Image 1 (tube, rainbow, N blue to C red):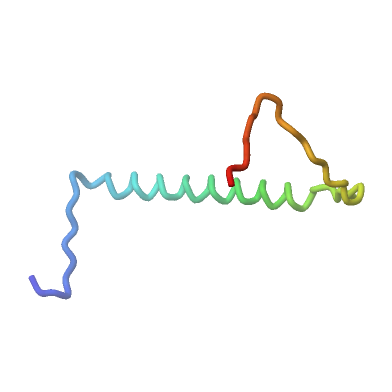
Image 2: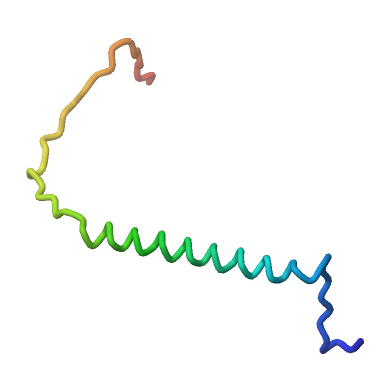
Length: 69
């Protein structure tokens, strides 16, 4: 064998055909998924914001933290 040849190993002749079918179905599922996601983005609503909310200081009850100097 020279370095330009490729050695292929397999258990039986149908393995490569099964792999090909798996890849095709995986590709089809991926194409279906991305088509659905593109449609979801295309049909998304525009949300109008209510403006900036005011900052709010909140305190958690039961938390006792003290600054140590």
